[in-house]
Length: 248
Image (cartoon, rainbow, N blue to C red):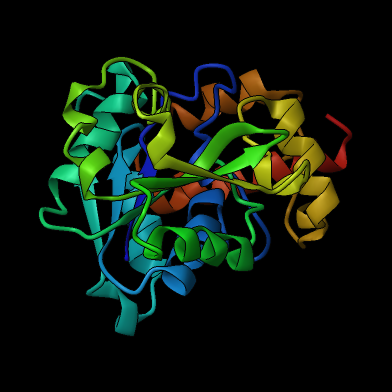
């Protein structure tokens, strides 16, 4: 089984580059999800990158274990502003002949490795084209796509994932009910991130506060002045943790 992590979104609602937000000592959201992919998939792992790509590449190059680096391919999506489908297509293009791809969102860092493994079992039974996690009967990412659906990904447009394909072939999709839980938390806003970070204990990391910081907009403006990846990421981590501990 291969995996594709979609990490190229605009993060327009959040403002800050959400895939690079702190997720505990030594982690950002993206590396949390990549670690889960490495634990779950046994084949190639594609990471589709867009916004702040140079910073994301720096993080991944400095985080990955040498024994896993050969399994992970970082792919640029210059069209990421056109929506999720562009990253899905770009990633799938890198996996010709794949027997199955686990599609993960880089802003779902509270996923559970055992639940991800459960997606694989119904697919391997051979009578479905896809397996999707579900909440109260509604399909939600992550999803497992077989060759039949992978061949149709090129038809998708805009900011949509595999749902249109599922609607066309519902009899070929197996829903795996997970119920409600943090595993479905999709970090689209600062409020959602802050709630998740506090629930996971990520706000308890030791750091040096940015004393004059008064909000996310001010942090965004500060980051825009820092081109170098290491300093950018250190400032982002300091700023986010400062805001979390001040109750923002």
